[in-house]
Amino acid sequence: MEADPKLLEAPRRAFVLPALGGRLGRLTSLVARYASLSILGRVIQMLGAFLVVRSLAKTEYAWYSLANNLVGALGMFTVTGISTGLMPMAGEAATDRLRLGTVLASAARFRSLLLVFGSLAGIPVFAYTLLHSECSPLKTAVLVAAAVVSVITAITAQMLSTPLSLARRYNVPQWETIMNSVLRLALIVALVAASMADSVSVMLVTVLAPLPTLFWYLLPKAREHAAFEQPSDPAVAARLKKHFFVGLPTSLTYLFEAQIAAFIVGWMGNIDKVADLGAISRVALILQVPLAIASGILLPRMSAEQNQQRLWKMWLGCSGLSIAMGLVIVGGGWLARNPLLFLLGPEYAGLQNELVLYLAFQAFSFFVTVSGMPIQSKGWVRHSWARPVMVFGSQALAACFLDLSTVSGAIGLMWAGSIGNTLMNAFLLINGWRGRASI
Image (cartoon, rainbow, N blue to C red):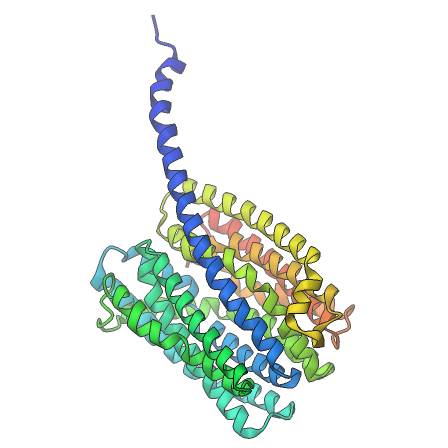
């Protein structure tokens, strides 16, 4: 007499289901702790951002926004090849302190070289834009120099945070962010109280505030997991170089997609429109909370996950959750649009529709970022040379129907680029799941 297969299966389920439940419970607890720290850090950053917007004159804030755009542009260019190449290699070396140090040293040197070349191309453009908006040569020089230092600080922070994330010590980089955000907020309050706040002083505070916690708190803890004194490895540099050339079209696409709207609205409209766009983008800082969770927890886990089925389930769950989060944030932004604009100050009243449109764009971009994380974590970048065609083609088509001298037109151009990115990511993901996208 044969045993009932269901009876034989029952004991195995009795062990498997509690194990799955325990694993899910630990992950939920981890995300909850990470989210609470992320929310605290972003709230502090938002307080500082709102204070800056309210305290600076519109023209001063426009100059400050342009300097931050230079930080974003240089940061985006220097991460080319790193975003898709570093995490897979660091994930492979996560258990070897010396090897991980070599990988990180090679990546840091590679990013530094990219910063030099990126500065040669990007600084003249941004400097000319600042001078064109009647910013003095001295202010322009200080803002540009501060932007470059800020990118160097960001490179250092990424290299120090990577081994901690791989070791699942996610709270350490978060506490560092909270501490430097508190210091920045305190310094900005002091500037405002002393009537010394302008684009240059606020930019200098933004650059200097992270340095104490970066070197006195984050660095000692990161040394426990990686030997940063290791020399760079030519083999690692060669792999990063390969990822750089493959990812260059994508990086340039993201760079122009992110910056072109501010430039166009500044040229076709006026410098105040740049301030309007920069101000409402501060409200979208709240979306950095789920994005920080995704990049801080999910990206290292995806890079280390070797089981394709578990990776697939992780991707499905995260993509669905990103849609739910986006809907909640857009709905909340619609209901609270007037109080949010009140926080920005009277100069930005009347931007209700632009604010909601921008929040919707950021929520959609968040979904695109989260759903495309396997591309970054696994290096699925083959055929990414086609991204400029998708993005710029979408933007060129949309430009025929948009008034690009307005803030709404600029946001519409961002929407078009994000839709093009979505189509490209879908193509790369399909090839990636089929095993045809790695290089």
